[in-house]
Length: 457
Image (cartoon, rainbow, N blue to C red; front, side, top):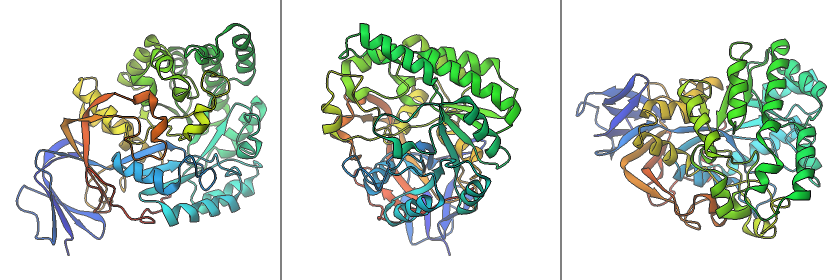
């Protein structure tokens, strides 16, 4: 029996947009129909004037739950995801304690299942780097693995134990251990020794209140050197390597130089594509993220890398913090915690790139959804609206606008959204459906707590 028909909209299919109606049964796409020919259904969604996209899959997301509820909870941040057209997200393993043992993974999976409004996958950290731990994570359905090439931040050792590997020998061990699993190995890549060197120099010579200081303390060479070493090691290891949040022209040059040498991919984020360090200086410590937002030259290089297929993913790196945490470090970029909310602005930002003719609609969707679904083994269940796929949809108004106002987002971190405050993106999420049920109606989140499902490759 048909449960729902979405009618009147232009639907993005793998070959491009098409004027079809979408019928839904049992939470999955039942069929694609010429306008007006879909079977009768008890519910109809009128998408006239809208474009129907497969629900967005964000492969890089942080909420750290159940720790730090003052920053946001699974409920608050998956509600924000629904408001942004994101129907599936992958939660990184930074938690308290770190998601580096199978037991912690199971606890987090149960916690997310109880509270999530949208579907979710969970990363694992390699932990003790034994085959037994690795294989148990695979059995439990870890969507991928994550490591840092930086040491644990001071005072946060338990959040990074089994995740942070600043030594190259350990990095190679992790790549070799996880090669052949079929799961991506995602790396936050910055050189630990260069970070220490440049931070010491910046502390001695730079104004801690300046928005340009953070970039000076973590310059692009820290990233590019770490990425070059990883790519060189992966020629030997053969892992399914994925470089997180690329920020710089220098790192793009490294990616180009290593093209074809091993199985690797790379991502960037809207904060690096749509903002520069000038915006960070304006917004202050609330716009501090790691790695730093850089210059217009770096931004241009990232867009060119997307055009050339060097960078194939755009993700949020959504990382909420409480206002009091950020504000306590006002005027001190060295002390401020790094992170900014981004789950509600990913799709509007990509639609803005379509409006500016930087991308086609299909390219934009591939970058923030379909490519990720394929890389992580979820296609064609996610990332398409072909028959049999999950009926996850983002109905967008390409002619509309998203006006970002600090305090006006759904995210619990709405009060630290200074980076995007006042920004207008051309494009608006008018409705979000998860498994054929409306979870965002354009004004309010209507999705139920616990309706999100755990997804595995």
